[in-house]
Amino acid sequence: PPDVEQLGRSTWTFLHSVAASYPEEASISQQEDMKSFLNIFGKIYPCWFCAKDFTKYIGENQPKVKTQEDFGRWLCDAHNSVNKKLGKPQFDCNLWKKRWKDGWDE
Ligand code: FAD
Image (cartoon, rainbow, N blue to C red; front, side):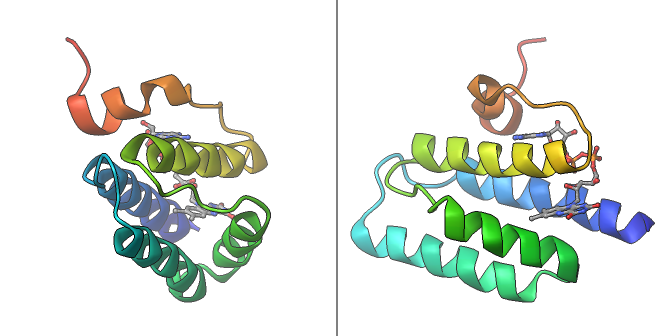
């Protein structure tokens, strides 16, 4: 259905933007906040089968939230696992920051 796609695009934009503004070195409490957020996100995301798979992914791939680079990469890998499931191309995670923070060169 189109809203699963539109919701997905908007939500990935939100999540990668959150990663782009995440602290370069996160404090323990910032790390705990992000882990809580991701757990709650998995309970309330309004596409139930998406949320169920995402929660399973988090269980098998503990969120890396020590640094902005760690979190950005972890989220990129999580997004790639959904891309794989949907038969979409893999995104090169070396480029996540260019895409979501610094902007492309041209
Ligand atoms: P999107 O996948 O929405 O990506 C948007 C943009 O992000 C892309 O144009 C690209 O520039 C960039 N991008 C792509 N891959 C990456 C990456 N790995 N890292 C960083 N940037 C990237 N849909 C389903 O049908 N079934 C599901 O189970 C499902 N689960 C989802 C779970 C979550 C947590 C979320 C947020 C979305 C889920 N979706 C699911 C929606 C799906 O992932 C897409 O958002 C939707 O299909 C629209 O895809 P799109 O091709 O427009 O690009």
